[in-house]
Amino acid sequence: MKLFHNSTLIGEVKNACPNGFEMHGIIELTDNAKDYNDLFKYWTDENTSDEEDPPFPEKMLNNWFIEVEDGERKEIGLPGIFDRNNRKEILWRYL
Image (cartoon, rainbow, N blue to C red; front, side, top):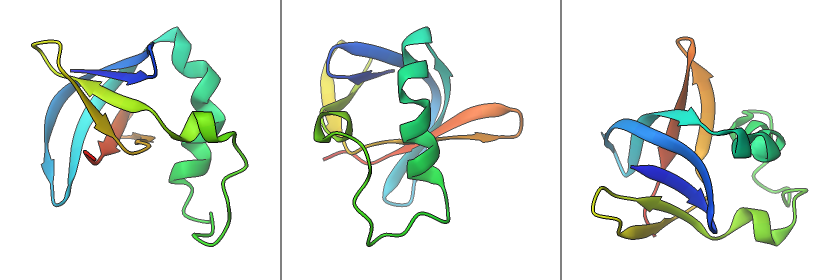
């Protein structure tokens, strides 16, 4: 599986499995992901208020996709990418 924002490849997702209403996996980020580091940190920060509008342009918040093995793209909400156990993990929901 691959994570895309618009046509930009962000990373390769491995070991994806359901986690309640979400999907969970391990992600290996590409160099393109560096442009999204602040967004991912903000999105996964437990101190971020749910009432607060994200300080990022609307175009960064939308148009996220998971590409499955057969090349089909499935739209997702903004994924959460975070460090855990010395690796990057990802959570997402299909729209």
